[in-house]
Image (cartoon, rainbow, N blue to C red; front, side, top):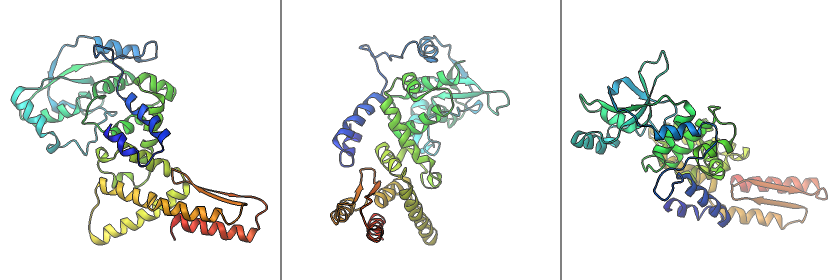
Length: 329
């Protein structure tokens, strides 16, 4: 709920209530005993349900024979020894308490097994000399493996909501789900949450994403959602790209760097700065004549309405002023 509280100052009450409901539904539904409830009679879900009920024989394999599955939801930038020191120490002291899930890799792969879930445990064991990896093997298809990984990691605090958003959209784009509704039912989350997650993941579509977002775990979901929504406006994208070019040159000149958190803050500043003053100035333009209206919405999208009665020259002047205010020229 702490994440939701941070949204209050940037979203309207109705949107907060809608998104709050969606975020809560991101966690898997469980019955009174705590057992995960998977939807029935949906393509692919019965296989996953059976997979969860199977008794697996545990095998020991060399960590070097494994590699993360192509759809795993860990940010590799985060997966380093420093972030896994606690787990490494725990395994050294009491052993690996929970096996990971693997599947035989495709022919021609350089490794024997894909790690479906348990990538952090795999990494920790790899860092311990002579430590073999406890694993259970599945023959499930990609769709079922996606569901199994979601079931395993749904309540994990180590995986950020933006990582989930990023990986969920990758699952959907695999073509294994017929629609967003099908995806929502398969993952047992609300359709509204799927929409919010996919919108937030659009942040990764920008050409500068990989250059400046070096750690996805440091991207708050609400900020990604808000920024990505604003960037759907072509004028905002052009403005942001221009500002990022200036930032890039400044970093190069000063031989400095900018981390993910500071870059997200930079995006917020250039997109949403001085919104109240900006809206006030735009409202003043709307009062000059009833034939001209300008509005800045909550997604920082500018709408200009001109009635045919407005003289062309005045229309040009008002539009120019509106754009100058919008881009703070």
